[in-house]
Length: 129
Ligand code: FES
Image (cartoon, rainbow, N blue to C red):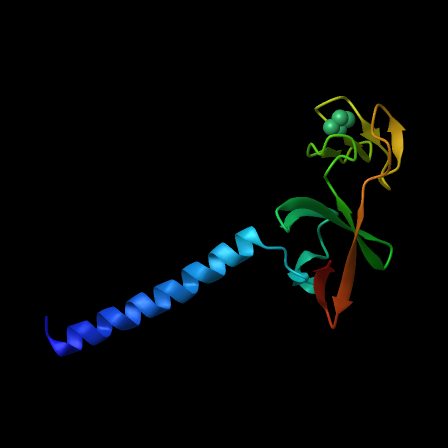
């Protein structure tokens, strides 16, 4: 192997190791905050779902502010589904139902869905743990 090829291979291996370690770190460890997009780009949506620390979160605009609600059921941690037509969250596991604010309407869930802090930082939305 020529010296130049060896150096290139070392460089690729180094870069690959850094990228892989970042991917593994992001998928295994919780992050403190996550940018979920520019307000100007997502303002037309009534809501969207993203993943924050390996859990689904619903983000929607309410008036002039944004809110983020965890889609993890408070009963046995199933992922609830958002039914936009009647603005309810429904858990497929044991039929728990939450209202549009995440408060329990019926079923076994012992408490409301968790709220996630969300901040508008100069037109950029961030979820904050
Ligand atoms: S896990 Fe959601 S109602 Fe049981």
